[in-house]
Amino acid sequence: MSDLSVFREETRAWLIENCPEGVKGPGVVHSGSTKVTFEKDIQLWMERMADRGWTVPAWPKEYGGGGLTVEQTRVLFEEMNEIGARPPLINMGTRMFGPTLLEFGTEEQKQRHLTVIAKGGAAWCQGYSEPGAGSDLASLRCRAEDKGDYFLINGQKIWTSGAQYADWMFCLVRTDFDAAKHSGISFVLVPMDQEGVTVKPISLISGNSPFCETFLDDAIAEKRDLVGTMNEGWTIGKRLLQHERSGQGGLSPTAARPKPVGVTIDLEVDDVLKDYVNDSTISPALRDEVIDWKMRSAAFRLTQKRAGEQARDGKTPADTTSVFKLYGSTLAQDRQEIVVRLMGTQGLGWEGDTFSTDEIGAARSWLSSKAVTIYGGTNEVQANIIAKRVLGLPD
Image 1 (cartoon, rainbow, N blue to C red):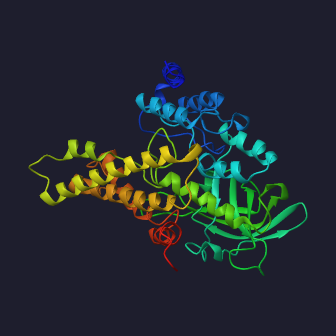
Image 2 (tube, rainbow, N blue to C red):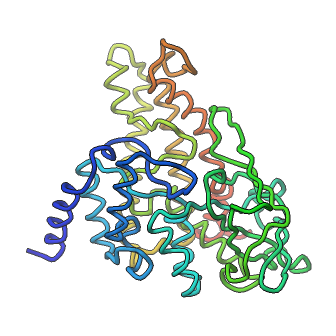
Image 3 (cartoon, rainbow, N blue to C red):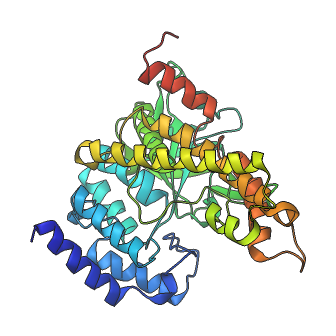
């Protein structure tokens, strides 16, 4: 028996013995936020998995990870899927900031931040976009003044997902206003629990508020929380975006398909077909759309799998993440559209006893999905990156 087979058997036995029933099937996943109280089973599952380093299984053990190989990580997630176990911990710290800090952080920064993230002790949010700097992110104007052993930060960030629950923000700030557009930008870490940080959730058409606007008024970031070199944060910021788009494009290894931001109920097309449709009621045109979507979805999954297997050492690919982000976000948006259309008028319910929880969730998720091709870099931005960085086309 191979070492990987032994690992699979041991992993399966441990999961069966230690996975609480309350974390099987769809539901809430621990976010690591100290501002949220989680149900007992969710908290227990996170703690048990963290003790083994399996909240971030591919991270080195010295930073709270499991030190697993790419193959072992894949086996772990396969066995979790087999018993219907939800991931123990998902946040921007595990999927975006953590992998970036592993590449660019100092040893002190890794020990201080990564170990806390792995134990579910801190949730993170992203301080990138500003009212005048969205797709053109390099136009950001949030100012950080060097005060010796700390930075004094003033400005505004927007679309900061989950900022109302976050303990920390990784933030792009301008530290040299005389430098060229893409220069003079630094990557700093800002604690959210301070007087200089004000968070205001943004109500969306779907009725929820996953995004926020964040105001920084004399907020403080310690000098030891400067990641990389002063005025050279643009490179680090771009690398983090690759990790973000890798997750949105389904390239990051996971025990479950991540739901798009703001999507409340992520229904399977096959389940909706079974519950709402039969051959006598579905129109030929809609039937063709469902078949087309399922074929595109299957092809995309196979491409994701191949790309994941080809990635050396399990590291996130570079500019090709934009290919997966563009196609994956479009596919996710199309999926929500098909779900509500298959439900007919029941897929347009906002509230009331005549609509089920799934039907109301489908309608609101359909509305939320309109932003999927915008956040994390619009489809137009991804197409430009692909044209320039992947295909090598002229400007």
